[in-house]
Length: 247
Image (cartoon, rainbow, N blue to C red; front, side):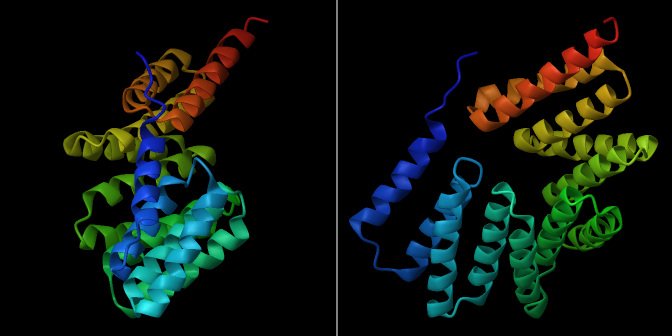
């Protein structure tokens, strides 16, 4: 299937053109900065950081506390993709403070999930699982099924990385079941890849390839180049592990 590599760039170019024309409404401009920051997360973390910081300044000047919290969260994600976990964690906690102040369960749950991801990357299992569990409780209270599936996916991956295989399979399959009901292709891609990784690490290579092929198909169809590269590398590692047994 032919990729559509220009898709994300077309969105970015369109947002930039709208800014260049001149946007007088501060909330409209804030929405454009936010969209640009998110669009650049994986493509160019430095650009994402730039627009997230502009979002924060504009939200502060407009007195938009919720928007500031969202911008701080987006900045935390940008630093995560820049592999600056210390800065990422700092901005997530700033975002969390605002979400707790306004008592927004959905935002609190989302940010705790992000904090869990950072502790996961830092190999701090106790803090990661604690953040995920707190996030899961609040997310279920706010009936955010999509976020619930994301947290289950992250928890399953975390348990798998620490040898809790049975718990990992249960959580990852719960995530897949929710995402299939939602027809959430992007979420399914992540869950499929985590299941593939779990199978690979336990020597079940054919099933690992099956799930990664599913993830690859989704990302090719959507033109998500970064993810196509990531999943392709995962497939390569599985083939290497499979055939190295016979070397």
